Amino acid sequence: MEFDPRFQLAGLLEWMEEQRQACGGQTAVIGISGGKDSSTVAALAVAAYGRKNVYGVLMPDGVQPDIDYSHELVEFLQIPHCTINIHDAVRGVLDQMEQVGIAPSRQTVVNLPSRIRMTTLYAVAQSLPGGIVINTSNLSEDWVGYCTIYGDSAGAFSPLGMYTTEEVIALGRQLGLPEKFLIKPPSDGLTGLTDEDNLGFTYHAVNEYIRRGVVDPQIKEKIDHKHKISRFKFKTIPVYHNGLDMVLEDETDYYK
Image (cartoon, rainbow, N blue to C red):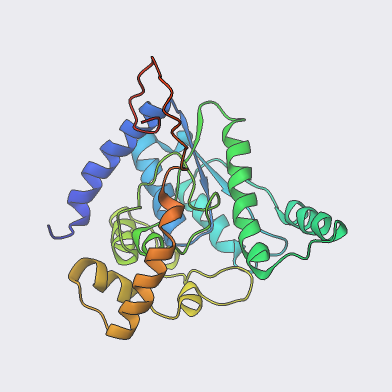
């Protein structure tokens, strides 16, 4: 099936309302970075739930040079929001690790802010009426595992999880988002490098591979490798099945 943003939006907005009801939720809580993913999810939530039922959380880690994008996005959408600086929380964990003799690895330093941000979103959500955290990841990032488990990979449900980066941009345009929020290059917020710099290939290459099966052989090898080693991030936590009887039935297969 060819991608048609108008057609996709109709089904997606209906699905989002179904998911909100299934969660027993009222207020969609979204981390706002000012990039295409969080901007599009926030715009989707406004369209699905109404702006009074959407709450944006801006979470800079100390001084964030591009925080203006986040401020402008929540002002454009006219949604309730707050700013919670996570620097002290991140620094507190790293300092305590060093005090007990554990030197934080580079991976720890890179991933900890994402996990602190998700913890913050859940803290906010549980403090608002019927708050539910909405995931903002897209298919292109998830396919190559470019996300942090229990960080930006978390949330009650994922509206964009089956859309490529280019499709997310098209959805954002269909929702009337200004172009500046859709073309902002995603970065790791630490090294100044973009996601694509860190990956070693473009999201366009990933998208062409996913949707058309067209890819340079050398890039294919990199994408396949990253995909294979990151699948654990998207699976339910493994549970040891001990063979003991369970009288109660569960509607999921988690206990089977």
